[in-house]
Image (cartoon, rainbow, N blue to C red; front, side, top):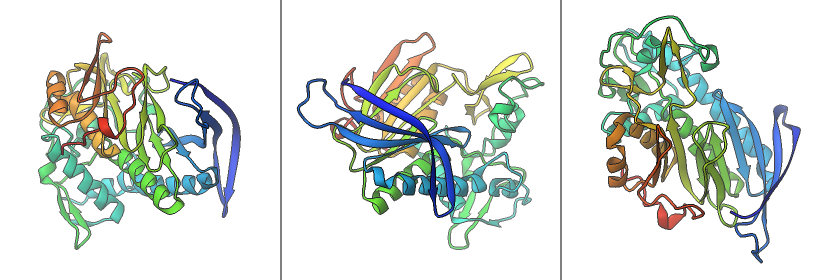
Length: 354
C-alpha cells in the first residue's frame, strides 16, 4: 500500500468574511515503498455536513479555501431544499401542499429528477417517497436524537406512495406529490452534493479533487499520481478493511452498522423496503459500489441492500465493481472489484450500466 504520513492541526479559514472550522491535514503519499517517483502532496479539510463527516481533498493546496466555500454553498442549498427535519424545507412544504403543484428551487428540482432517475434504474428499490415510512419507525428527527432509541412498536406494513406519483414540471419549476407525501432523498441528495462540488472544484479551480460526505466519495480529474487512496470499512469511523485507489467517478457504501436504533424493544434501521414501508430484512452488513458518479454508486449500494441475496447478480449484470459483506463478515466481490492491493482505475470501472 505504500507509505503514508500525515500532519494535522486545527485551523480556521477566513475568506471574504466566511469562517470555516475543521482539521487541516498535509498528506504525502507514495503508491510503492520503493518508488523513485516523487510523492504527491495535497491538502485535506475535515468538517461536518448533513450530520456526517465531510472531507475535501485537493491536489493544489492553494485551492482548498475556495473548494470549502463551494462545499458550504452546495450543502446549505440542499439542506434547505431536502431536509426532512426542517419545517421550512421545501420537501416539508411539498408534503403540506395538499397535493397541489408547488414552485420549488432549481436545487430541489435537480435533486428530485436525479432521485427519479435512480428509482427507475434500480427497479424502484430506491424510492424517494419513503419519508413518511421513515417517520413511522421513529426516524423523524436528526439521528443523534434517536440513536438511544425511541418509544413505540413496529407499525403495520403498507406500500409507500411510489416514485411514479411524483410530478415534475421543469418549465414551470413546480413539483407535485400526493397529499401527505414526504420525500426522503437520503439515498441520492448527499451523493449529488458530492458530485456537484467535485465537478465545480475541478472546473473552476483546475485541480484534482475528492469530496467525501459520510464516506460517499466523488472524485474529479486530475487526481494526484496514483489516484486518491480510499479506505473501505464496515462502519463509519472504523478501521478500513481494504484500500482502493480512485481516479474518477464515485464510490459509496450502504449498510446497517451505523444508522440503527431501538423502536421500543425492536431493533430497526434506516433502509426501507418501498413494498411494505418497513426496514428490509438484512442480508448484507455493508455494500460498497464504484460507479461513474457518486449518485449512481450510492443508489446502487442502497438498492443492493434492498435486493438482499439477489444483489450480487444485479450488480454484476450492471457492470458495477462491488464489495458485499455478509452478516458473518464474509466478503463477496463482483463486477471487477479489485483484489487486495489493486487499484480501482479506469480499466476496472466499467460504468454504472444505468
